[in-house]
Image (cartoon, rainbow, N blue to C red; front, top):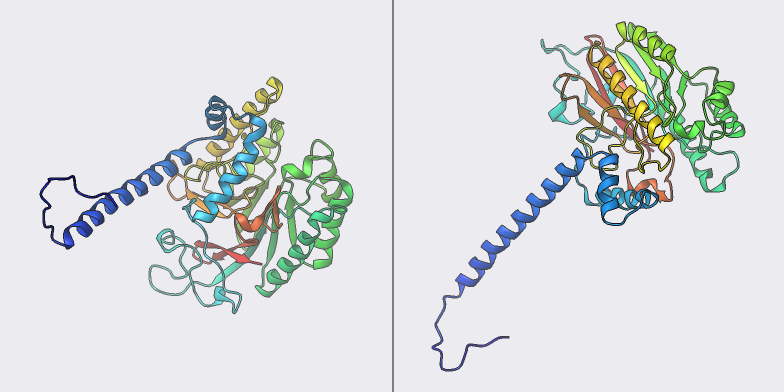
Length: 380
């Protein structure tokens, strides 16, 4: 310990002053740290992948390494508990809270999605939709065998909750090969559930497009009406192939009286932390091929078009998969419009465990006779 200089008078200090000073300094340091973290998270959530790629390249990190950086970043953010949009509340597995009037989304965003009407009279539930995503089933790869058990577990929970329709929003398989797609179809058929499916980008891999998926499931877009609610399922899974004008025209027509839109990947992620804010027209690492860059820019422009179409409709919510993490953000340009991402059934995010990001889960959309709705998570 450093002493006083020789021949310097030692001052008698009151015992409590050093601790007060240290406490004051500690508060300042901690406050500065919290502010810096808050600013960093806010700044990171405002960046898109293309901007971040440019920043990383300036410090010597190539595009080929960005996915590795992304994985580490996402895992550390998940471990830290930093807010990443609004995370959905969890349904209890001990009983069925859906019949008990319990809110299943955060209270601060539940104003228009309550179980009771303004008059205080409880509204009757008219429909429950189970929403699954990112199954990543394979027929041969042993590293993904546990995903089959997870899917079967989700089927059991769907039945226990009395789900009316089950929707799967992409990445049913890991490679899009016919044996794996056939396996998923077989599992779905044997479940005796009422189901509908969308392809994800993984489901396009083997056939470099939706050909394999359409061969097994018949189509890649869908719309249907149940109990007066209209649902539109639209395939926006391709990262580098623009959607045809015929498909966009179909979507425009279906949106005229739609209530909910389901997509393979999100179209609005503003407010989500970097690397969790990937959306249609973006990828974790920017392609190095000029041709792919051009095509990706075209896909992103179509994302803007689709988002504008939905904002000009009466759609209540857009629900997508692909992130392996459930979240909700409010559309800043269309009050009342919500953008949800559902969690993953599969147990892996690339080389990382799904648990490093979020526990395996699916979502339930609950609709009421007064037009309100709730959406929450069911963990496996």
